[in-house]
Image 1: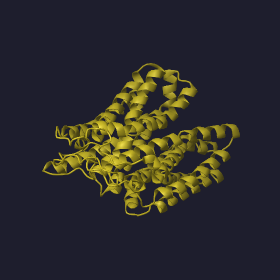
Image 2 (image 1 turned 30 degrees about the horizontal axis):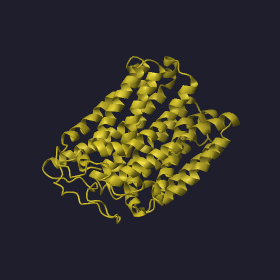
Image 3 (image 1 turned 90 degrees about the vertical axis):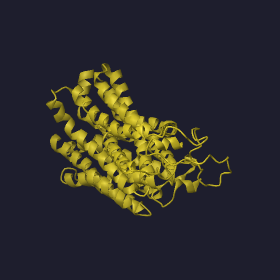
Image 4 (image 1 turned 135 degrees about the vertical axis):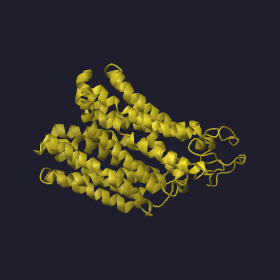
Length: 440
């Protein structure tokens, strides 16, 4: 990653020495590789750090409302656009697909423009996509606007852990916790507030969806401030060429990278199944629709405090395997309860599933800990999240198919249990105290 790229994220760096001639790969980090931290100097350093924190929080708040607000108004959107059931079902799978496809592009964009610039553009894409899609006219325009917003979410998903590693290398856990908590809060707020806000704004689903663009537009501002601090000239010779700013890491040859990718994919599968199908499980067991919605809200709300605490705890441990096992056991207990007594113990199962879903912030924390440099984190983040989201696509669809053909929840829940076992296994492997640079 070029040194100008890092200037996008923070205060001006000290002058760099000319690039050394190419040397035999000994496993050492290249002289022009991304430094472990953007150098801080001068009176502006303190407030710039505050701007970075504000940018992280605001960006994280915007990583899910474009999705969960649509879920809250999906019936109205279908009726308003004349959308078929097939297309509506496709909409539920589009986020994971876009996260995978656009996530792979994030490292190249970061090398060319810098992580800060790409996250800024990502927030702008979310704002434009969210405000345009309800008024684009017809289903194709709605899908195009959604894809634009999801592209912005995807690149930001990948690069925000890089920003944390760059600015806060000694506080990866706490900062990931803050970022994860804001993400969970944004998810819950959009799910809870979209319907009442729509009613308060006149009852139009178009306005109810578009209003979330204001939050994304607000998130652009701190990243614009950081872009204005971009160092104008003086890049080290050769640092603008792709590849010279990164250590020679072959990410697909790293067992740790693959373990993280599979762990990320399986935890995402579990989360999407929970969000998509848990209310239906409760309703089929005799729980009212209103109570089933509240139970899902409880499950999602568990992520707000736990997403703040869990990364802090994980960063203090040499091996995060015990946390993986603990979260997995909660998931297995929750699934067992949903099978044996879904209505009788509904609140307990909702709490257990909420705890289990906190494998997401744990995965983000491990991404930041499994590489020595921001250059390695951007590769690992892109690989683990993109491959992981690809893995997650079939799960919710398969649960729906099993439910439809079996007429009950026995087989779908058996599938959920079956997926949790390998999630625990690969999570333990991903939690080992090693870095991908050591596996070159």
